[in-house]
Amino acid sequence: MSLAAAPTPSVRVRAPGKVNLSLHVGPLDDDGYHPLVSVFQAVSLAEEVTATQVGDGAGISLTVDGPQADRVPLDATNLAWRAAELLARHVGLAPDVALHLAKGVPVAGGMAGGSADAAATLVACDALWGTGLSRQDLVALGGELGSDVPFALHGHTAVGTGRGHLLTPAMTRGEFHWAFAAQDEGLSTPAVYGRFDELVAAGRLAPTAEVDADTALMQALRAGDPTALGAALHNDLQAAALDLRPELERTLEIARNGGALGAMVSGSGPTVAALARSRQHALAIAATWTAEDAADSVWCTTAPAAGARVL
Ligand code: ATP
Image (cartoon, rainbow, N blue to C red; front, side, top):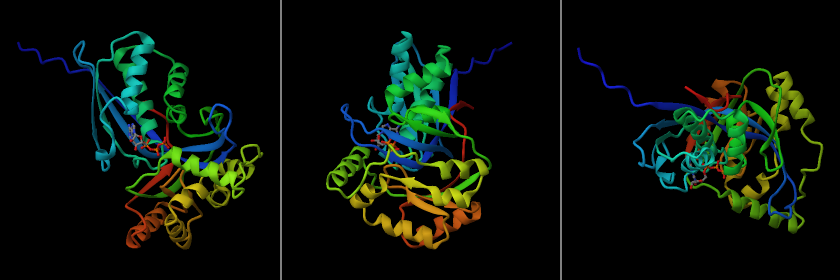
């Protein structure tokens, strides 16, 4: 009798990208951070991370595929790599793992794809190494890696405060349809915040994190009303992103002319998000962007989506 070789243990985890339904940015604090109030919604565009066991002492290795894989670092600067290292250090294990990222979120598009990789890696390595950490532990580790990582673990819809990492779940009903216009040339998040600070200093923008915002937005989510949600979308970073990339105005205009219920720059951009009435409507907006050469790639998705979970 011959015995089949034992399969190599491997764990696959999916984690979502996000759209900021609202993003209120406060003035720079003494630590060099901007306090945020943001409503995050996880979208069904997602990253999949596979963590595979390797021999003792093999260390971390990383491979990536997906439409924009050539734009992703393959070394220790990758957030997935850093997540595996951090978890191993936290539990006192050697960081031995082969990571594979299947990227489904536009890269450097303000949709937190790298943060989703980090979240998925934490969950995958926790399962692979049998470290048995709680979700709370993983969220705390995620917060050390980046302020968007806790939300990629959480998923669904949530209000984020602090640096965006302190999350309170938001109640929503139904499903929303989004179209995204992504650009090959990303915008650096620090550069967008830098321009935001310049615009504030010049008196051309007022920081808003102090305002009691988003009542209409939360009502729209609770009612599952896409028209009201479209009217309530808000992004304080949009002016800074448009100042750096004026051509995004046209991308926004095309979506509005196409009947989008709301259109805005997503997070720090340069991706533009358009809220549609239906999947067909999202596809139509995306097709118009393509026809008018207003995006390098277009993506359609539904929301909300679940947080990082083992497949
Ligand atoms: P941010 O969280 O800064 O808003 P983003 O959502 O705009 O980021 P990401 O795709 O997460 O964009 O990555 C931004 C940059 O981070 C990339 O240009 C890349 O150099 C670097 N990076 C590090 N790790 C990753 C990763 N796993 N996937 C993609 N980019 C990564």
